[in-house]
Image (cartoon, rainbow, N blue to C red; front, side):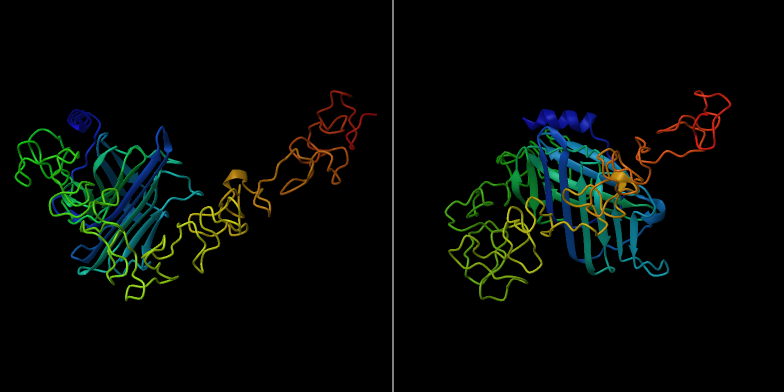
Length: 442
């Protein structure tokens, strides 16, 4: 049962930063977290939140004061992590003029400055109250540990961002915010389209104490007014049945693509059957409708009966089908085994290490100052003079017979006997006091 795990982890493992009373809640859109079990460096998290006509505005100056980000995952194994982001040049402000109110703050890790956090990218944007507020975050465990894990199964995911000297912004998935659990196992925890904002976290939840802890729970034991007698009935402890919990409840025709019931095509976010060709785009099973007003910005919407019916071509569908795509996953004849996540091939010479490149122009931390035009590092000892090398083994035309192990030429006059020299200045053990100016003994 999750009760024991949640109680132990909630009391012992979690370190909570309580959000201020005036914290801003942003409606979630999509949460995606995956890892290869047993390999924490494979952890990758993507968070997207988008609230239309939001009353929230940007405040704070993280470039001067830094920021903190708290990640919270609840479920079979509950974990959280608070990450401190430094001030400085990793932050970008839009507009750059400090006399004009900021409409976007963007943080990005830097290979040249050195990785200091698992947050690859963080972006918050708003043009003011009553406009769209966006929050986007990408977290990787490859370079700096991401110490949260796939809950298996998960019941809640949350992000709390505090900009130094300014506001706190929270986004919730699952729990009181709801949403569709599109995959929930040992590898993936995915939640899409929460129906509510929820509240900002204010303490560690304990499932089983008969207290409903918002925003994580909608019921708890005997505190089940929201769903009398049904608390946790669908296998997600301390949650009432809801559209998106993968169980078909009364009033639902289906519940996620894993529980289609009598539906033959797909299930909508409203837990109703979808019909490709009815002119209504029913997400998430559909992305477009052929011949209707909801057309694809690029490519053609799949027609009923096709494997891609009511879906738009996109980067990641394993087909090169958009003008901007050079490759797509395994459809990579343009650059076998090298297709990048954005469906383009690596370009040697663009000053960015991509694919199997060891370095690329100024992006040369792997071999500082010695990146070759082929985007590999020069190798001293391969008998080929390359990069900043003066010579290399038998490739010694610059100093025949006098190439050293560090791929430089011996220098007569540096007080060090090297190469074919018999002596050098005061380094004259072979002929004490008699070393000639040409580094030979009499």
